[in-house]
Each structure stands twice: as C-alpha cells, then as structure tokens.
Amino acid sequence: MNLSRPQLVSRFRDVFEADLLRAEPEALAAHSIAGKPPALVCSPETAEQVSTALLICAAAQAAVVPWGGGTAMAVGNPPRDVDVIISTKRLNRIIEHDHANLTVTAQSGAVVSALQSALAAHEQFLPFDPPFLDRSTIGGVIAANLNGPRRGSLGSVRDLVIGVKAVLSSGEQIKAGGKVVKNVAGYDMCKLFTGSLGTLGLIIEATLRVAPLAEESATAVARGNATELLELAQKLDQAKLLPSAVFLTKGAVEPNWLLAARFEGFGPSVARQVSAFDSLAQRTRLEIEIRGARSDREFWRALADLPLQANRLIYRMTVPPASIKLALNEVEKLFPNLLALSADVKIGTLWIVLPANGGGSSHFEKVLSLAQGHQGHAILFAAPAEEKIGIDVWGPSPPTIGLMREIKSRFDPREILNPGRLIGGI
Image (tube, rainbow, N blue to C red; front, side, top):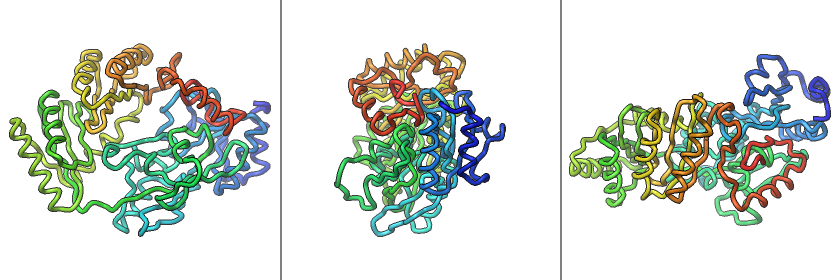
C-alpha cells in the first residue's frame, strides 16, 4: 500500500458519509481475517459507492476483502493483506421476483433466509442450502460456491446463477447473463464469478433460478453400521426412487452411523416413496424413523452447517460414488480422533471434521493421498488460520493455473481483491 493507514481512512472520510464507515477498534477486530484487522470497514449503499471505494483502494494499492455475512471467512488461503473491508450489508434489496419465469433478482447483501421468506409467500424457494442461512448472503454464497445437501437433485450454485452484476477493481461496473433462464449470448461469466471468492470483482447483484415449494417433505432415517447403510443406499438408488438428498453420516447429528433420505414433492408421492424406502430397509433388517417437517428441517440444517463449524479442521474429499465405502473405511482408520464424517451418497462428497490441534498440514497430506488413490480430489475447506500455515488449502495447482493467473491479471491487474485467497496464491 502506498499510503499509511490513517491516510487511507482520511481519503474515505473525504468521500463517504460517516455512517458508512467504521474504524473503531471493536469494528475492526470483528472483521479481522487470519488475525489481520483492516484499516476500516466501508458499507456502501449503492453500486456507485462500491465503484468509488474500489477506485480509492486501487489508487492506494490497498487490499480489499468483500464481506457479506462473514460466514465463509475461514474458506480459502489466508489473504496476503487486509486493508479495507467492503461490506455488502446495505446492498440488501430484492429487486425483482418474476413468478412466472421462476427467477429472482436481488442485491448481493440480501440474506438467504430473508429472501427465502419472501419467495415462500409465492410458494417458491431458492434452491440453496448454504451453511448458516440466517447470516449467509446471496453474494457470499455465490463467491464461495457454498452448495448444500440437495446439490445432487437441485443443482449446484453454478447451475442456479443466471445473471450477475459486479464491480471490478478499476471501479468499472460489469454485467453478465440476464433475467431469463435461456440466455446464450456471450461468455458465461456467471460461472467464472461463482467460487472466485471475490478475487475477480465484487458481486453487487445476482439473478437466480427459483423453484416451486414442495407440498410435503419427509426424511427417513435408518441406523446401523456403515456397511449395512451403504448397502441400503445402493438399493435405494436401484429402486429408482427420487430422494432430494441421501447422506450417510456419523457425528454430525448423532454420535453413531445413520443414513438419511429426504423426499419432497406432492403428498401422495412422498408417502409412496417413504413406504418404498421402509420396505427396502426391512429387507436388510433395518428399522427406519420418519421425521416430520420441523425435525426434518432441523436435521438437514445441521448437515448444511457442518462445513463451516468454527475452530475445526474440515476437509472436503470428492471421490466416485462407487468408492465411498472404501474411502469411509480408510478415513476412520487414518483418523481415530474424528469428530464427524459425512458423505453425500448421490455425488460422492465426503466431509471430514477433525479437532484443530495443530495437525492441519500433516492431516491434509493424508487426505490428499487417500483421495488421489480413488481418482478423487480433496481440499482443506475451512480451518483456523494457524492450521493453514505453509500449505495451499486447495491442493496441488492444476495444469490450467497459468490460465487462471491470466484471468486474474485481466480482471484485477493490481491484485488488490482478496489477494492470495485462491489456489496458487491468486
């Protein structure tokens, strides 16, 4: 940075109203990342103010960290510098809800739970299951690519974002995609911004697909050992039923292994599928428990929140679904101090939760080796900053790392946006 911190704060105070800036010690401490407090927190109310803030930072070579609800700050590598936090909390309006075309446009600071409540009034919902939805914002979910338990049936965040507005480090406002589902004009910049952790630009608005709310929802839970439950999961898949989520988990909700299948849709369809699942369980001599709507929501909320539990080492490993059984057995043998282990049976994603006691690097080597042995991949998804020292939490750089660096240089040539957070220190 080519200014002192007091000079940087003074530049902002020359331009912004006092109520849009925070520089008192308590506010700075609350927005520290990896033990690095910013010089100030700026909360713009308009896209133009976001542009102005980024122009000031670009001129000063000040590192900028976008901040939505603050739920995903443990994701990614620690930033090299933290000079200015740009909070999106005031950019929280729902701009347009097109009921007929099943789309909604909202500012990036809109909280997911508030948007869901607004959509529910029209019997629709946003197919996001991010952690801590009462604090997660639309922009944060997109930037961190926070998929939930129903990804295998409802699609990923990348599938659901059809339009984005963002501000680049130069202050330029750009738009990608549109407000209709069938939009094939130009490059698909929406997918580029999804998962970029704010390293390419600050998202200020997004247009998303929505879906009709299910009439009924029920979760069938079977208990037993991992082998029995995986056999039941395989029979469930062969039975051609349509669960919206199937998870095998231990420690995330209950201390012992359980298999949970969630069914959603019209009442008769849900009842039929639950009955069919019960019959499958009985053939394998397993009993099931049916959870009603309220306990159903609480159960899946606990699973959705698992990846961002505080003060934990949380690894995400992805393997072919056929390798889940072997991978689970190997993880349990490698880590006798497991706090939780959860597997999305539909897509082959495993969540490994360990205590944060200084083993971040050595554990990561073991998880990476295990994943690669099954033609899979692994990352250290979330952890305290001290557990990330000396490692790239994204794993080995891919052959496309050169292209990724070139894209970064085109969008953020001064490298002021969340510097170092992505793979290879991008």
